[in-house]
Image 1 (cartoon, rainbow, N blue to C red):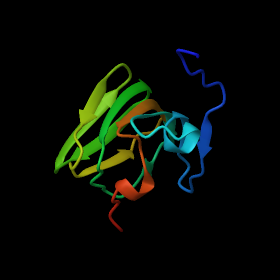
Image 2 (cartoon, one colour):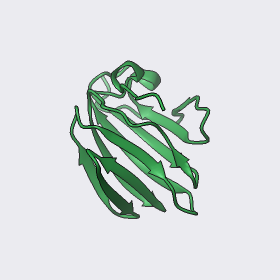
Image 3 (cartoon, rainbow, N blue to C red):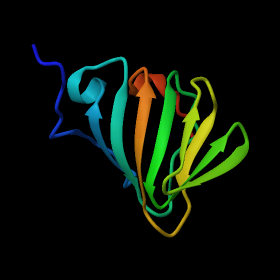
Length: 121
């Protein structure tokens, strides 16, 4: 039995806001519920509604900058920086900057659309 899982072709999550999401491990790509790992790209000017997810989310910025509004506090991360946001925390993600942002997202348990709880704008 193999002691590893190789992922050469991630699942491309359909989006309508210009952000690209390539899930390497997680519910959408391989049915794994414990953790999801996604390579993401948020275009300049991108934003999404605030949410209060049922999972912890770790973000590592590869290039560009990303803005986090966490319980009313604004945090901006740049390339090489990372953050962990605890489940149940109200957060709004955006890229109000002039350059694209590329980053990795790890969620525990795995990301699931029904556990995000996005607000309507």
